[in-house]
Length: 98
Image 1 (spheres, rainbow, N blue to C red):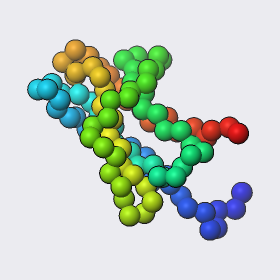
Image 2: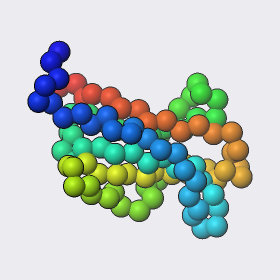
Image 3: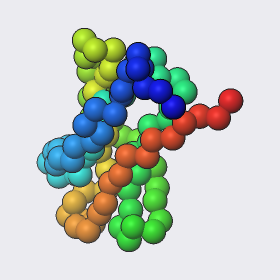
Image 4: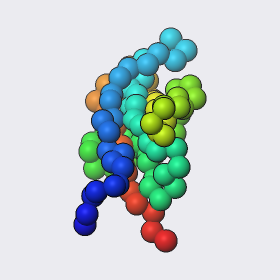
């Protein structure tokens, strides 16, 4: 495959953080995705054992638009850290099949 002339959207895939919601700390994941990247799915998932993964869909604010045609998205785990201190988040990126 030739890469000349193609944009790379694999910019810093994700960054972990802790956000506070209603006085409780939650693990969060921030990532960038192309605004018009309809052929790629981005999904944040959580696990406490690295075997079973569940979707994480609680956004932190609205996506932030970037000048390079991407948006920055932050999603937090629904479970507070106090209830689940061993927790893992991952960003799953998959190409949509036609």
